[in-house]
Image (cartoon, rainbow, N blue to C red; front, side, top):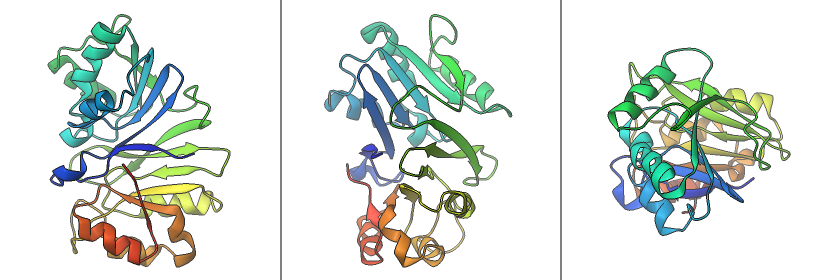
Length: 235
């Protein structure tokens, strides 16, 4: 399963667009994150044409990952007449925070608006199920990575993380994994993103061709990643 990327930049790397990816199957669209530049990217590529249902998995509530939710929700209702579904975890207050954000955007939540659905089987042919895996990013913020179970061995999508632990857990449980998409920064030291040097330290060279960098802070990060044998998400 190959994801179609709409952007691969970190929040301040505006030339690369906000990091987000999607899958289009017939009249259905699946989005992994929905940052500030995502709606315009979807429109420019014609990916919303003929869509009747949009499913969105949001990793956390920084605006470069959820800033287009309001516009997309209004567009689904008033322009497409399409249903919009948001994937939420079973426990915690993430659903309530999403609900509050949508209400601030003026989006109705309920039968005539956006609905919340649990992670798991989502009805797409490209993957059997999607799970939300807790990760660490910014202090005090609930954040998730995504694991998609596929016929090819599984796909991992880190979203924003400052720890490699969920990725390593995924590799242990999916030794024949298909792909992993990893947040990476060229900045060193403690922070809210995963340093490329740390990712390289925990990823054996034999696995790096299946690990694709995304949410990068600059072009140097991509270039260094290629030199180390990693793939790069293509937009």
